[in-house]
Amino acid sequence: MSQSDYDPDNIFARILDGRLPSQPVDQDEQTFSFADINPQAPQHHLVIPRGAYTDLTDFADRASDSELAAWVRALARVAKTSGVAKEGYRVIVNIGGHGGQEVPHLHGHVLGGAPLGPMLTRR
Ligand code: AMP
Image 1 (cartoon, helix red, strand yellow):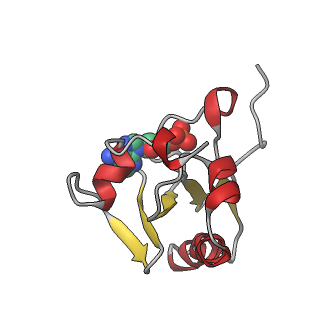
Image 2 (cartoon, protein in one colour; image 1 turned 30 degrees about the horizontal axis):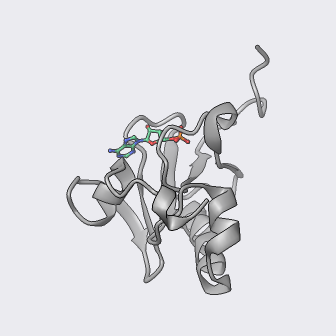
């Protein structure tokens, strides 16, 4: 994966540069976090790096240590500020086709606010 594989017009790229609206909940120099448009739990937010990374594999390959740390810290910060950290929450990162990733810009889902049930629903 290289930056040339990144689609600069994907939905989250458009949210990052203001072409699309969002409901921000947290941001810093390297990350941006916002409400999921189709929440799967009482609290459901997405945490993305500002850099152009397609997925977690790409991020681990190319991001700086500073970007990696900022994203992990943002995931935990959003859990705290959205009020789910104390009772427990789940972070999901979908990657590629089998992972069910729909938007090709790395994002972590932070879900909580109620018991979330089994990790995976068996097919
Ligand atoms: P994934 O299947 O892991 O790629 O998740 C993509 C997520 O992006 C889904 O949970 C969608 O509901 C969410 N989503 C898609 N478009 C938007 C948008 N414009 N604003 C906020 N969340 C979005």
